Image (cartoon, rainbow, N blue to C red; front, top):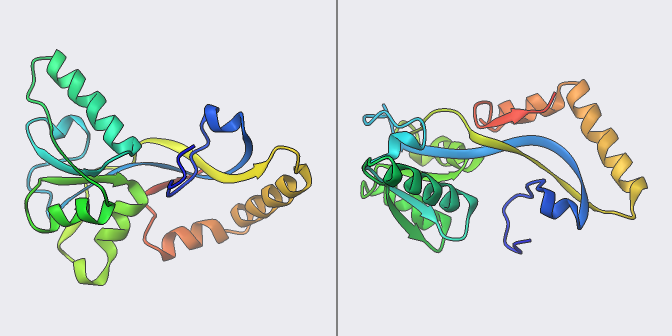
Length: 178
């Protein structure tokens, strides 16, 4: 497990160590200038374009994998520009140095929704390859896991989960489980 993870994806590898109570699915997001002038909605659309991404992330891994596919197909590859901090990657888009920013879909939506960015950016497409994220619980703590699961179920049942997602502008950035 990466100690600096921004969210805990419920991967098979992690499930060997802890149990998860999943509450959403999150994918990769692409942030582009408002109006999406280059029509970027998928990783394929990045062929021949420049994208900024944080080092050591699943987003960087996905871009590398897409580049291998593009190269094998004889298509232009993605100009992947990497940065230590996610904010530095986003800043490259804000400065107009890249065509897109790649990050987790809620983060891309957050950057687009910030008041100082109003009307400057938009999320290109829908979350790419969404995976479940969850709350990690020690395997031996079944009582806690059951309590957390009951709370998440209640939040879905009474609409609280959807209300929170809508309030924070994440409606198109995450996938609800129920």
